[in-house]
Image (cartoon, rainbow, N blue to C red; front, side, top):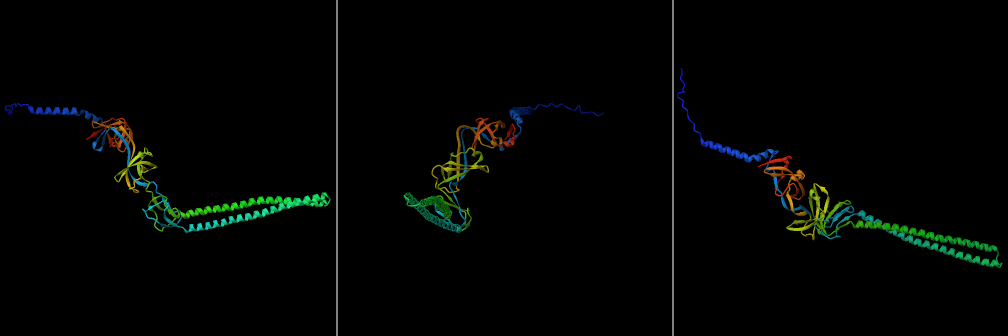
Length: 423
């Protein structure tokens, strides 16, 4: 039989390690305290629909103070009066000036050689002279005709008077028995014929006189009409000398020297440097608030000038509207056409207004809500916005001074009610 080793085993007493127990107890207390401290945050984290890194977002604080709405843009100097001159007739053009030359109103800038128009003027002038001769001849013929008719009328009147005297004499002689009654009857017939001739001569004189007047008037009207045609041709020939309509400077030449052009072809432009304006492009969203007469500032070359909005285009091109400002006062002399200047137009200025920095959240939400940040949780909050400027937007409802909101990057929230923001 094999003996076991139970007789040899000894009970070993293990003493407890107090230091290790204290360490485990301290760690447990620390873990419990940390869980208690993080419990609200963990609760909020679980209540959020998602988490977005703060590096992808932009934040701004709601402030109260002055609010200025303005439009700042780059403008270019343009001439308020910059006429382009065209060829009034086809022909070869001789330029009398060069680009950049200073010109006066009425000065000849170019000459068009148009033999066709010149010859037509000569022909129509000759026709006008011929019509004048016809008109004068009609007057002479009318005077001769009136003289002839007047002569016939006078002769008829004399014949009437003679027949009347003969009748009186025959009647007296018949009463004394000196002549037969047949002679009295013959004298009466002669008087009747004289009376008829007198009436016809009088009628012819009146009717022919009116006919002659109509003939003279007709030739006069034809002559006057021809003179108008000649005057118009003279104007066209005079317009062959292209003259400057304003005092200014020759801008662009659209043709070469001695070039042959068609009617209505562009020849050159003239810039009136005494009436310069500044043209700017305004975003469509601000153009609706822009009005004629608003004040602004124009700056460049180390100077600042006051300006007034003088024109606003009714057309939107590529999301922008063209507007013009004129200088309030004397136009600066040192400016040049197409020179770039900075323009600022004041739309509105108020004090003690609740505002926040402008961001994409206005466009993304349509200004109906914003994400209010508190303890790294962004909460979707209804708001109402008012006017907006280049860098700020007015807050009417939903936020108060000191609130922190997300102004850009909210597209990643996907409309969630709450979103955790990780650092």
